[in-house]
Structures are given as structure tokens and as C-alpha cells.
Image (tube, rainbow, N blue to C red):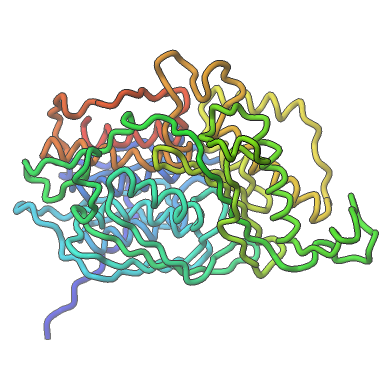
Length: 488
């Protein structure tokens, strides 16, 4: 009876020890110094077959350094499907090595039509997906299905709603193949509920937009895959044509006590609202008011809209009941004239607000401005009512969305900080997601994985120039990882 193939085992090892393997050593404390560095490095290592070792993993996370469950799941999955050797892959480990199996003939490991990754906790499904998607896309020849279990709406990570409404459509607009996301059950933290999502990954070459001006990868070379050439400078910061809102909240009554009790009680009609109804009403009112304070140049209006209450249509995209008062999430999405979408969201709970999520993607200057503002603001009292918490969540989401559309701290043209440069064409969360695919598109054009040849075709050809002052630490870190592994 033939022996079954052994699953790669993880053994503790010091990545600094002398071995025959030529590791590319990465310092996990570089720039943002979090899990994104690990995810991007592993994705590119699997594609290029460049062995990597990472030390001081998540070293910039105070009290939270080392691998989390979602990281170990992604590493193990990539090792399993590529036949790679891995070391140091345990929860809490601050170093790991990943050595892809050599394939002299240039072929990839056999690809199955279905895979699954099940997390034992409500860790982010889509952070795991971020690590494995580039490799699966590079080897898929037919549509393949990936089933994921874990958290769909959890702190410090892309939500299902953001991925479905912003990230996936933007990938498609930029020339990547269709990506179908199917939600079977939502996953939340506090209290933990595991969710289930299925992703249908279509292979490279299956997107009709890949043959358009987005820049089809040349068929020259020996990469075995052809990522589309993505040039963000082809797109300016488009004007907003429509806005859509997602509200996920409990259908429990907003006020659980007797009528008239509690903080900030309003009319009896308002007291009869559910948490979801109240939040939906609040976010629409707050958003309409905030839009009036923004320059009209941010929006694309027509004659019929000029006299209306708002400059552009505002609609509810999703309104969905959740099973717990603490399971509350908001997303605001702007559709723009370029076909790209901008999104900002907020999650209920300590440490899950939009402000905290933004901090991980702030530039140094933005962080100083936020800290100064926070220091001068009065602290909100603990033990607040559900009404005040819902209002604060709405305020955070709306303010963050408005700042994405127009940064009031920057005078002059909307979104512009330096003459001749503009704010990126996508939002701050989407921008760092594009970096790996931009780099892989350039690599495909050069035709040699990890090659260092550069040509005119690799340079930005569009009429717009990004202002790097708007690049978050996540974006800067992603670019650094790409330079290390792809030798750009």
C-alpha cells in the first residue's frame, strides 16, 4: 500500500542559524511591523519559490508580538499546497522560516478544485485570504473554491461587507479576474460566533478587462502566469456619483428599561425603535448633514440633484439584524466616476471603532494630528447608554468617510497636498491591498520571477501622480516587502 504524503511539520528553529538554504531574512519590526508583513512575504515566497525567514514577527505590537492563529493557519495552508518546509510556526512564535519546494521544470504543485481553511476562533477570514489569494490566483487554471471559517466582522481587519462591496469590485475594475464571495454565516467576536464564507477564484486570463487598457501582461517570459499590469496612475480620484450604506445591528429594543428612563431619552416614537432602526435613521441623517459641509467639487451632480436634499443619491445597501446587541457594524461606500469605490466602516466594541482601525494605516503626520486632537477632546464617560454608543459609532463612521472624500486639513483642491500630485484613487484600506498585485503585474511583464530587469513599460504611464504623503504604514510596508522579494 503506497504511503500517504506527509504534511509539512513545523519545528522550532532559530532563523539566524547557518544552513545551506539561502534565506531572504526579513525583520518583522519593519515599518508597520504587524501581520501584514508576514502575509505578503509568504504569498510572494510561495509564488517566487524564494525561501524566507522572518524574525521579530509582529514586533511592533506591544504585548501582542508573535504569530496568531490566523497567521499559523495561512502558513500551514501554503506549506501544504506547495510542499514547502516550514519551521517555527506556532502561535506566539516570533520567528518562522518558509522554504518552497524546488521545481526546476518551472511547474507548480498540483491544484485541486476545492480547499478549506477553518479557524478555531473568530479570527479574520479575510486576513487569511489576503495571504493565500495571490498564490492560488497564480496557479489556478480553472475556477477553484475556497471555503473559510472564522470571523467575517471582527476588529482590525476587512469585513465581508467591505470585501464584497469595495475590494472585489475594485479588483475587477483594475483588471484582476472575477472573484465571487458567498456569505453563508457571519462570524463575530464578543461573544464569539464562527462564520462561513465561500470564495470562487477565477483564473488569470478569464477577465475581459485584462485585455483592455489596464495593461495585459506580456506572454513573453517563463513565469507560468500572467498577472495584469496595474497602473493606478491611470485613475484620478473620481467624483462621487452615489453613496450606499450597510447597517448590521440587533433588532432588540433600543431602550430595555421602562419608558422615560436612561440617558438622552427622546420622543416616545423614538423609544419604540429597535437598535437597527435607530442606527439606520441616525447614519442617514448624519451623512446627509456631513455631505453638505463638503465641497460640491467632490461630487458628480446633475440638474435634478442640484435642488434635492443631497448632492448625490444615498441608499441603504444592506440592513440586517444580528443576534446580539454588541454585534453592530456600519459601512459607507462611495461609487465614483472612475468605476472605483471608496469605503469606510466602523465596528461596535472596545478597540473595534473606526478610529482604532485607522491608526494602523496612518502616516506619521496623520498620527501626530490625531494624537493632538485626542488630547484636547474631553473623554466620554463609561457606562453610556446603547443610544449614545450607537450615535458615537455613527459619528466615527461618517467622520472617517468624509475625511476619505475630502481632507479638510489639506487646503486647496480636494485631496491634493502637493502640486501635481493627488490622493490615491482608492481608499486607505484598499491602497495597501493593491501593492502586491501591482508588483506581480510588473514582474509578469519582465517575464522572470524575481528578476531585476526594468524597462519603460514598468513605469507609471497614467496622467496622475500619487501623493505618497497619503500612503499608510501598511502601504509602505507592502511596498518594502515587494522590493525585498521581487528585487524591484
